[in-house]
Length: 276
Image (cartoon, rainbow, N blue to C red; front, side, top):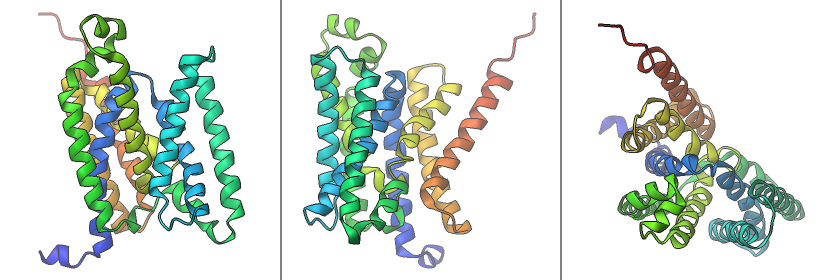
């Protein structure tokens, strides 16, 4: 208790949000990386910049909800263009990413007294989270975590083969939409944690590290959760003790685990067995 009493309340709140959102992003990332949707989450994150600018333009002190709504609009635009045009998916995402970022920067440049907010949302500001943000993270993690685990088998089947999932009775279209909705909300709300530039790393790095060590989906899910938890906790603690930016510290903690998992997979897991 005395140790916790010596820590600033804002640091405790940052730690709480990091250890809640880290595993949640990592859990989602297992399916994001398996379905090759990393660029999708990156597009959503960068598209949020336009929502931030519009939020401030409309007079919001906290542009979280305009940011989430605009991110959902970008996700809907990706899905609509993918279904109704002949454009390739990466072309659609590149188009929307560059357009929304340009629009967001223009809007923020018009707000003379808000230009400093650009740095805050680009690189994250987890140390500014309040009690409401902590509770929002806990509720979000609980609700989405329960949904993911109840849909684990259909999602795994959908990830392996959409046609096979459809034949087995999975409502693939609605499950795809639901997954995109969940991913968009989590990514946009995680911007306070790492910022627009780094937020995708928390979705991609833990499952990538877990995949180096896991031999099946169950192991990858468990290892990814552990790595996401470790990255959030270790990065926040390192930020506190070494006085470095918290978001990049979390990313570097995850990178360190990835390097360790890569070395472990090469040195131990793939060693040839000796002949009897």
